[in-house]
Length: 394
Ligand code: PLP
Image (cartoon, rainbow, N blue to C red; front, side, top):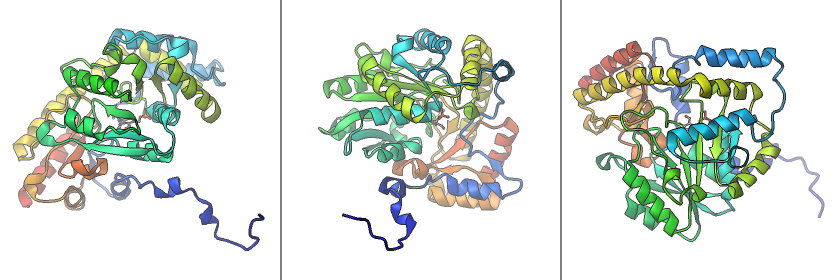
């Protein structure tokens, strides 16, 4: 059969998967914020700190020394060794550097590779909502089906094991977890992770564990599901430098997984990404070797802000759980009678404070707003004074 020679609309050539994914619910607000003067933003999902100088300097030196070429596909061997040591020391999991770890362009790429490695068209991935805006879209782009399990404020946004069991079907490939969570700021207790591990093991499904906020944990140290006996073979751990070391623009993350999965991830990476940025990899070596004090310094400041923001929201009358990690507060706005979108729009227009409506992270976030405290204490105080005035005005 020959193709029609008739002139047609070139937009007909676009892919269904590209056309059908929903635009991010966050964009709308940032487009408004961008053009607004005197706006205080609690909307941003990245550290307000500069990348620590010792790390940036190492990146600059890498350029000076001409380390600006492709690296091995998997990553610079010294960095792989350090990541392996870090995962062992911090999270009690053991990965062989040159077989079970892959350095990626942020957790974003690590997630994409993980999904591409396990999904055949129609396969299901269980997603816990409210969650990071990219999850469903990433799954759909590789022709998988996100199966949503909602979690709720009055249950501390914990996963209900019964709901999880019911969501598993013969098509389920994996459950995608994120703890500490964007947007709720909550983590899962060790007992719950052990229970989830038991359920996934019984049902022969994998866990993709996005632990990008693990270094920003308040109180209890982070516990990785991969450290539960028997789970390493069934888990793909995702982590990186964006949040822990204020390195979002360096685009550096990594995945750790059993070799049979990692072989596929590496193969796809060789064709689609080649290698993570060389300069960033050298900077990350410095981050792991000498960046611990910087992480601690940032954590002290996040803790101060977290205590202030959670207490103040509760004082204002918007119930807020104390974040256990990450840098987001997720107060309940039910007492105002407004939808999250109306709350966020009115707050922005009338009081010039940007927050993200909770429904951007899934239906079960609809009574909440996400407020990032990755901004200065002064900004946070101003924003909360304005939020208080707004709530009183209703
Ligand atoms: N996972 C979660 C839960 C996030 O919140 C983000 C960024 O906000 C990412 C992954 C993407 O991280 P990266 O900058 O490493 O690609």
